[in-house]
Image 1 (cartoon, one colour):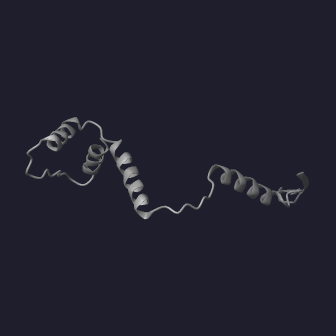
Image 2 (cartoon, one colour):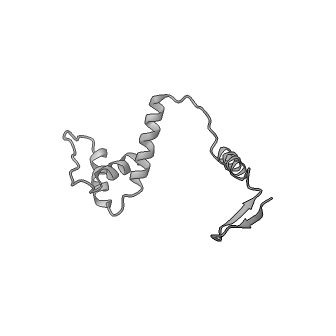
Image 3 (cartoon, one colour):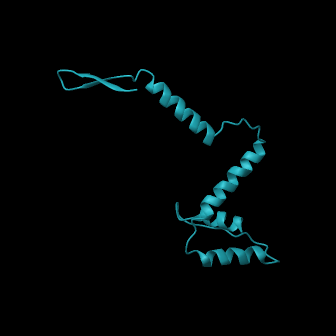
Length: 108
């Protein structure tokens, strides 16, 4: 239990009964964090980790494609055409959304 031990000449309050307070707070949060985010060592296949990383990137990037219906339709048409014998190139300035568009197309 915490109690006031006194006030010094500078007006600073001194408390007693807090000797173990920091340890109790540390233990409390360590336990709660451990319950919410358990440290489970899982041996994951590196190829599976890479695939999950790519899928998360694709999902994250693909979710931010807004107002690109025309280009998405053009890419879909290109992909579904039977006798396409030429590459499709997506060109744009840095930050224009090329990766986001391709992630959205790959997610379909």
